[in-house]
Length: 329
Ligand code: 13P
Ligand code: SF4
View 1 (tube, rainbow, N blue to C red):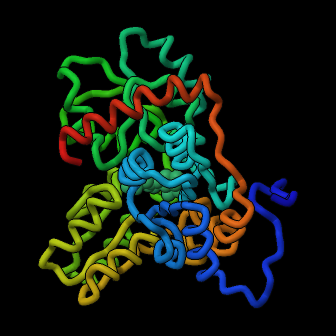
View 2: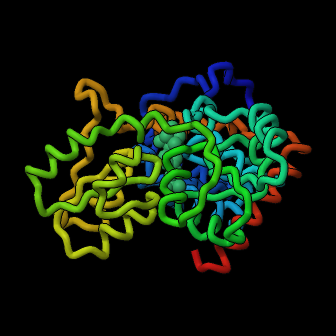
């Protein structure tokens, strides 16, 4: 393998003009026994070329069972870390290492450790949108697909800390009657949706169902017809008799919705500031087809997780996968 510059967090190498990027990605996948896992928030071309597209739970489940030599995780860094923790023997690549997550950044491992020390006797439930180091301080990991069921699997009087998403945690408290202590974190994409803009849109489309991810603020969730993970929102759209949907989550999910339901209309909830594309996750969108091509070509950049941290973090991840499998999730 020739030396390449990854000082910017991705392979900074020119691509020959005559190259058919799509065809080359397909060829290299086969040649290297590599699979591409993509989250629903990736750009459409990446979702189309991926071997598997799913929500964060499905990506972890897929990583755990797949037998490729190389996993290319087209998502954000914590998704790559989760795949690496579950498959330490595999090479796990991510097209752009800078693909972080504002929610994961809102909870640092040291801060969580101090918070735990201040609350003896509490169990820690961490959303999968956390670093491996935070997971290492966690009793069980959840995603938005299984959070409710996992919280309910604890005895009603169990003292629980839920982090880092205050909106998801607050929503789970409201539907389960629990009183979990909530970390004060949030996702900058989901927090920016505005009730006024969605209400305006609803006036123009009175028959439309409003679909919202639980990372949205409670005021948005209160006006939603369906609250759920990306996979749950997609499933609802497929099953529903409705013809129109206003979608309050990252707009990448619309690709799969439109593909599965060509006769239905999906309207992205507008960003609060109409001059920005704030309903796109700027981290997710750092991954591009060109970076994916270079990642496969040079097998860089590689996701690594400190082995001591990984040995601790795998415990709450595997607990989550076991419960999810029992629940058929
Ligand atoms: P899902 O678990 O619904 O895929 O969501 C992940 C995420 O990052 C939402 O912002
Ligand atoms: Fe993180 Fe929000 Fe982007 Fe999801 S949409 S990856 S929670 S920053």
